[in-house]
Length: 239
Length: 239
DNA sequence: TGGTCGTCTTTTGCATACAATGCGACTGCG
DNA sequence: CGCAGTCGCATTGTATGCAAAAGACGACCA
Image: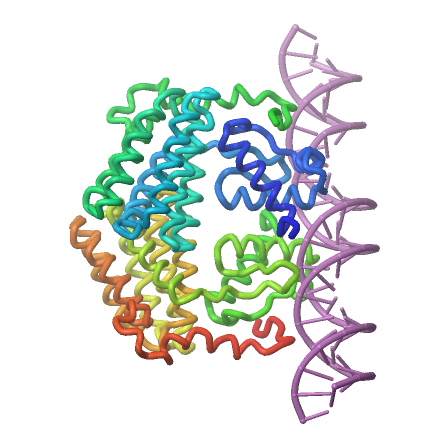
């Protein structure tokens, strides 16, 4: 009854640290430090990093320390384009198929989002909102769709951490509620539209609106500011 | 200028073997056998398997030999649902954006599909058709979208190998040509529709049509027949 | 003859050891 | 004082070794 494999634990821990913004994009992830921290060898730490890299949360560079991924602005925008397609598929498949228990679970989750909103600077709010979307995907019962939504939602989470403004998760809560209502009422059209709009809103709030005019250099350069933050020799702070 | 890392070579080789159906779903992939075959240690073979598992082409089972993934019928159907969404996004982004060189490259690829159609039992035909879709995705210049399409196209390739009938790639060629024409003429509506229809056709030809009536047990059980094929002690045949 | 248990082999899970690479610091020179 | 070359250390790349789990095979019993 042990955890089926230890590297999963490490992977999950690191992932959570990233999603909670305990680790910022660009932060280094040395294998031995990770192993030491979790009481395992470098082998498993390395394996965990490889998995996270395949999810796009970590960037592996040959002969260099792995770092928390730093999504580019274009990446972030692309993510949401894809997310919209995938999650429209989710709500389409889900519409009218949810039982009372599932609806209650979703509403409970949104309640939790509301409670924790702004608790620690809204950092776990992003994670909770992300988990709401993952939960929806899981309820389709479709393994592959769930995996894809989960992965891209995690990535989006990282992008939001990178580019997002600090505030702005509150509105998501009411949008989540409206979506649940539409799903309950079996209104597929509206549910799809709500999901699209919701994700567009999230992207928009987070500055991801496709820049109409590329004149504003400050915005374009904003992402690269995080590089300064990663001082040399820095290791795994946080935890 | 060395291959940036050796495990990538192994991974690519195994992947290609799977896509060419040199390795069938359910075939076992022992770490040391792979390592021996490619002249590397178990460590790298293991790493390669892990990557392929993250792509869904290989199934890892704790304390057991890895096997080539055996997609379920539902998985296969879900894959195409997702593919349709992702590839509609591709053609939408691509429409009217392709230059003459790119169009020529696509047409050349289709010509190659035509030439090799039925050469070795149509096995490489599936791979080539898959690569056409990947090529389209690459031309969007969107890294994430490309990665997703590539991955799900590979998985579909595996599903087709599992469930598909032997014939039936020929029609895909004319559909590919029609798609290129629509892209050239900047007819986004038609291109999207063609892509959707095309993928539905592919799925349909491969038995993936959602079974209207579940009466035919033989068809439903067909996928599980491959289990018999995987005899005990079998190792890595082909190569 | 058929089923069950125990042992034995194969194979994986994980750690450790060694080689190679890259970065930073230090030194020497202009 | 600044710059270039060189050395050394930190960190990864890869192989190997040992322990444990899972299946295969054979023996024993009903």
